[in-house]
Length: 310
Image (cartoon, rainbow, N blue to C red; front, side, top):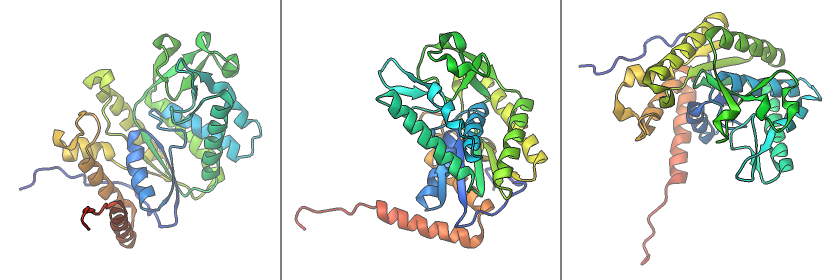
């Protein structure tokens, strides 16, 4: 008897070699695959500015880092106006998660600039770009609420990567439509291919559930992202779609594969999705290498029992 409906058609795939240089950006699920790659000694840069939940914030990072990679001397100057001091006294950036922060403005700006330069360097070297979209909702900082008016030289609103627990009145919520996501992706891919003509891109939709929108709202958001990624994968031969969302919601399809919060995948589900990722993007010999490195990783993490009498 069969108790699941396995995903049959993974569409276009391409091999990830042992010496490939990778960049993974996006929501929590990008961290799931990215950390496993890093633990197994693949050369991956993972979310250098922290988790990015929506395509708009993700493309903003690629836009600025891409300009730095192309030698735009003024690109890094865009970072400083995004830094602000929060009520907790620390400094943060609207371009990044709380991963990028500092006790002073200068410290935060330096950390943000370092992250952008890391990203720019990786853009000029990478073989594989992995993008995971979490939600089609994003928040824009209202010009009337910004401490630094230089933020708004190109418009009356700035999309933020993270609201940093600032008051809701400072932001306006927006929902990206399918065409907007595809158009922005098209622009970014063209720019990136100028830097790395051999670049390949893996896109996916995060299976994490955004219950703040309600169950119906979450499904609408995921449907929009699924439509966008489908058009992207069908339009661009450099792109492969990995069905992480479908594996959890359609193939596993059971609450036992969710973490206790009922919104994140469980570790068992993450391991299963990782195994499917490896089987479709890595050769047999590469998968064997991953298994050997996994055994080494388990051995390193093993803590032997120390008896006081020994």
